[in-house]
Image (tube, rainbow, N blue to C red; front, side):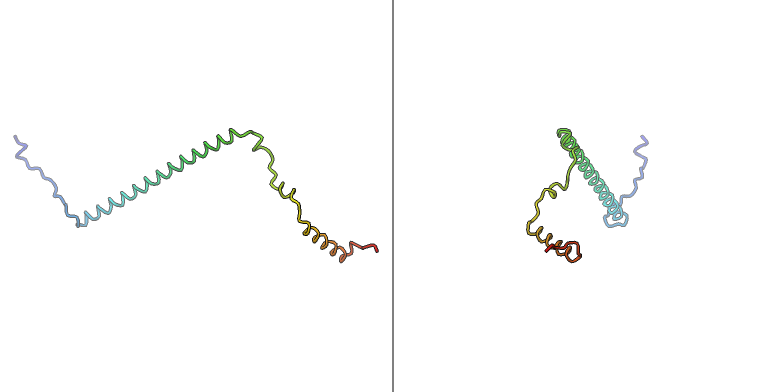
Length: 113
């Protein structure tokens, strides 16, 4: 019987949008929402990069498991194409002529005559 006679004090609602407290609250909430969105985007990017990395590792492991052992453990000669390459005859003749002229000037080469 006493409950309807008792007054309950409810704090006054501050509903107006332009009060300093409400503006500050909105700004604070927007900043918190922006931070949460950034964290979510970072989490998504990290998950995507981890899944890509796992996929690449899986592809690499299957590639090397299926390849014969001798194909990638053999010595690789990087300069084989240069060693087998034939030189231009005109260039080699010019170099030989320059060498001959230099040897004549220095005195290494004396022509019999």
